[in-house]
Length: 328
Image (cartoon, rainbow, N blue to C red; front, top):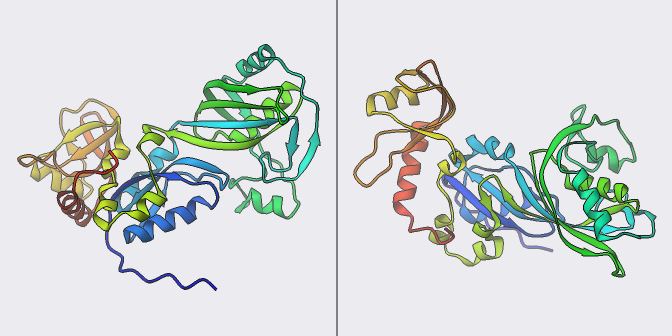
C-alpha cells in the first residue's frame, strides 16, 4: 500500500509555471503535483491535455488564475503522428481497433489532401472529449456506450505542415505540425485526414509545442521541479502579467491606482482599447505593480479583472524575494 502523502503548509503563491506535461496521467494530476511541490494555496490550468499527450501546459497560481481564460482562448501549435490504415473507437491509440485498410499513397496525394485542411474548417467534436452535453462530459456517455448528437464546430487551421512521411513502413504514418485556433480537436483532424486519404487513421502521438506566446523550449519538467529546492521552484514562476503579453500598458498614479483597484472607473486621454494591463506607480528600479486588466472606451478606463490589494502586496513581496529565474 502506498504511504499517505505528507501534509504541507500551504502558502500564497502567485505566477505562471510553464510545465512540460509528461505522457500518462491527467492534466489535473500534474497540476496537483506541481501545486503540492510549490505548497500553493490556489492553482488552475489553462486547458487540458489528454493523458496520451505531452507538452506545454501553463499552470496558474494565485492571482494568475484570474487571467487563465486568456490562454484558454489562445492559438495552439501541436506536433502529431497519424498511424495510417487503422481506425479506432477513440481516434487515438487507447481505443479498440475498428477497421484496417490498405495504405496506397504517394507524397503528392498526401500534400493535396493536407492543403484541403488549411484555413477555416468544420469539426464534429469526438465522443471521447470533455465537452459537456446536459451537464455531463461526452466521454461519460462514450464509456456507457451511448452516442449523442454533436453539432459541428467552426475552427481554423492556420498552418498544417507534413514533417515526415513513412508510407512504406510496416505501420505507415505521417508526422504533422498543426497551428490552430482554440477548440481544435487534433484527434478529429487526424481521423478526418485519414478518411480524406482513403485509408483511415488514428492519432498515435501528440505533443503541444506552443500555446499563445509560450513554447516548449521555455518549459520545466515535473522531474526537474522535484529535484529543485523551494527557492528554485519559485524562481521557475513567471510573473502574473506574463499572461497579459500583447496587452497595452497603462500606469496610474497612486491616487488613481487606489480607486481603480477598488473597482472604480477612471477618466483620462486613453484611446479606445479592448486589452489593457494596468499598473500602479513605479518606484526606483521597479516597473510598478500589476493591478489588473481593463478596457477603455471614450476616455474611460473600465476594470475587467482586478487583483486584490492583498494579492498586489504578496506578488511584490514574492518577486523581490526570489532569485533570478532558473528557467528563463
